[in-house]
Amino acid sequence: MGAIFEAIHHKLTEAFAPTRLEIEDDSSRHAGHAGATPGGESHFSVLIESAAFAGASKVVRQRLVYKALAQELSGQVHALSLKALAPGETS
Image: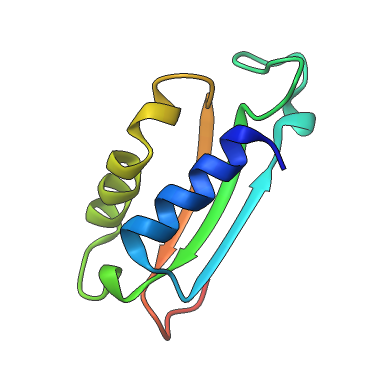
């Protein structure tokens, strides 16, 4: 796991105390595309389940995650595929 992966994991864990957190570095599938970097860690998929999302709309959930990851999203992370769920919801 690289430094960006670790930062994403740490920040989401601290901000949302997730009951489920899956992070996948998809960078290798985007090699040669815009924003791809030779060392990877530019494209990620995240599935996060947290009670913090209960009652919140999809847009609000996304905004909360984007705020928590603002530094990464303004830097090396080019793309983030996100599923933010409340406990009991299905992906």
